[in-house]
Length: 365
Image 1 (cartoon, one colour):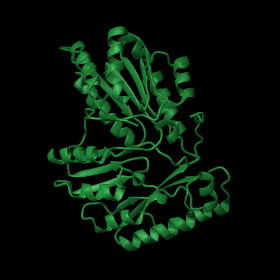
Image 2: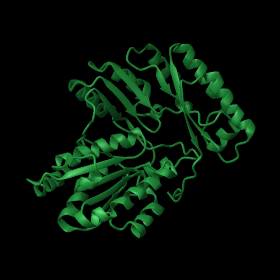
Image 3: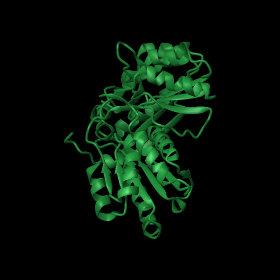
């Protein structure tokens, strides 16, 4: 992994901006999926607006249409293909540029279907190539060539990308990318790669700059934030403590932690903090140790309940939310009853429940 400053791509931002001079082109962006996708879309919007585009809310009034996709659930695929079908006639009539990126583009069967059934797209780009979007767009505008810019690599970390935030007082800040957990129901490690943590100096600079601009609330993002490793012993607890010191920041949130990595120093840091919100999302997925083993979750029903007891003891006013998957392969009535038992004992404030959705993955990586 290499940390690279966003410099070379600025050349292409300027080239596209020159092409767009005095034309006031518009763009539309649809974001599917999690807060990480939302943050990626903010970066895409930042680059696109620097290239001279003006945001609009109707894809059929846009010169550039961008889909930032998610592949966690199958209905996301159906939504994308439905939207593309609606745009076929508009594309033919106007020549609008259609760009499709995000996690879904890292799946070979999806890109194959796009090529076969929706060949009127212009750009597809992966989770590791957002930084190259200005170059891809320039090639479309200047050379009219279809672009497929997907790298089957773990990805470098790019710092300094332009970002268009929609809220002046709240901001999403990604602290790490990828995941090493390989839960059996999850495709994320195959489409976003392995864990890569940002340099703490870059994270703290971003948050300091946000605070100077009037931002009051920060949400730290990662597929598994509490496994953050900034190097030389710089843990997630240490990062939280440093963010706490930043003047102007009044509230700190983070999502999503993994129960197996929720260490005592993190709990202690939250308990002693005046800024970290005592609202924690703690994904359970199942209350059955048998199903958790099938899920490769690395925690048991008992260890989860022990963790919750520890958190509630140290942080009496804590509010907990969770994720639960029902209908996982092999789940029996007694397994589901174990899940209900955990829910009753913990008394979650909010539960996000999902029916198990099988995902196709490329296991060759």
